[in-house]
Each structure stands twice: as structure tokens, then as C-alpha cells.
Amino acid sequence: MDKNAPIGFFDSGIGGLTVLRTAQEILPCNQSYIYLSDREFAPYGDKSPEYITKRSDVCVMRLVSCGCKAVVVACNTATCVAIDYLRKKYTIPIIGVEPAIMPAVRECGQNKILVLVTPACANLEQVGYSKKNLRRLCDNLNAEGYNIIVSPQTGLATLIENNLGNCDILRSACKDILDRYPDICGVVLGCTHYIYLRPYFEELTNNKIKLFDGNIGVANRLKTVLSL
Image (cartoon, rainbow, N blue to C red; front, side, top):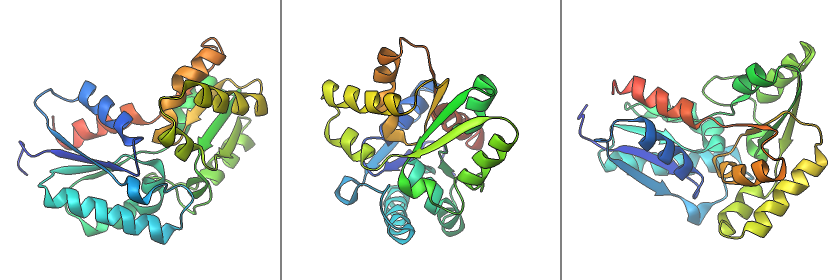
């Protein structure tokens, strides 16, 4: 492995930039990066597994052709659907991102936790590189006395992608979610696009709810895998 080679990131749009930003904060400053946005074929969240796998494969292939020493699937949906396929096909490290459910459970205990995901992520047999069924995991935790609500968000990633600079639209989207799910302790932002909603959730709740995403876990995993 060429230690000076770049690290590749891809997502269906701007969501994965949040993962890249966290990696830049945590990894050594001498690392270089290539970011691939597959926006022409977005969104992934409401597509079939076959479609998502095909697009993910195309993205990884392009990043590998650029000489990347590792690729981050900076998209929860693509991780859910395609991570196993990609790891079998390519020899370089493939790092995924998954909903930060267990960190939320550790912090919130048995208080109400809202897990925001795309429809494709919510409906899959297996989710993430943990190979755990998302709904089964949450059902099992609920059976143990926890209070976890999985909420697929149709169209939310596209709304964020197309309105990143429109504070009123994004604030309204967050308010609609909070109105539907009162008295929550924490929100798991289970799509990298949803991380852009963090300041609006904080504003609307006066920082009284906890927000969780998988970005730090991805950056730390990269650091370990690449021995940085």
C-alpha cells in the first residue's frame, strides 16, 4: 500500500462531505483525499438494492482507478446495501458508516430514541457492516426495556441536497419531525445528509436532545486500518 496515496470518499451527493470533514479533523494532516459525488444518480435512499449496489460499484471503481489506498462508503444507505459486495470485490480497505444506535442507547438509556434513516436502509435484511438487521436490533433492544423508534424519511435527503442554504425549509423539516415525535431524548442521524440538520435540531430544542451520527467512528476506523 502506498502510504502517500489518497483516501477516497463517495456518496450520492453532499452528505458524505460531513464524513470527510470529520476524517480531516481526526486523521494526520498529511493525508490527501478524493471525494466523489454521484449526484446525477441521486438519491439512493428510495432505490432498489440492485441500483444502489451498481452505483456504489461504479463509484469505488473510479476511486480505485485514481489510486486510492482505501475507500469510505460515506453513505448509510450504500453501506447498508453494498458493503459486503464491495469488500468481496476489491482488495483495498472499504470502510462504511452505520447508524449510531448503540452510542445513543448508552447515553439515553431507556429514554425515547428516534432513529432517522432512509427507506432503503430501514427495509433491508441486513444493515451496515455489523450485519445486524436494523429493525430486529431495535426490536430486541425494545424488548429489553429500551424505547427506540425507527423512522424512515422519504425525500428528506433530497430536500437537504437541494436546499442546503435555505434555513427556513430545513428548520421546518426538523420541526415537523419533532412535532411527530415529542419527548425524545436523542436522535440518531442515520443518513450522512441528515447531519446537516444538527444545528436546527439544537436550535429548536435548546440543545435539550442528544444527537448521534457515525462519523467519528468512521474516522477512527480509518485511522486504525491505515495505521495512521
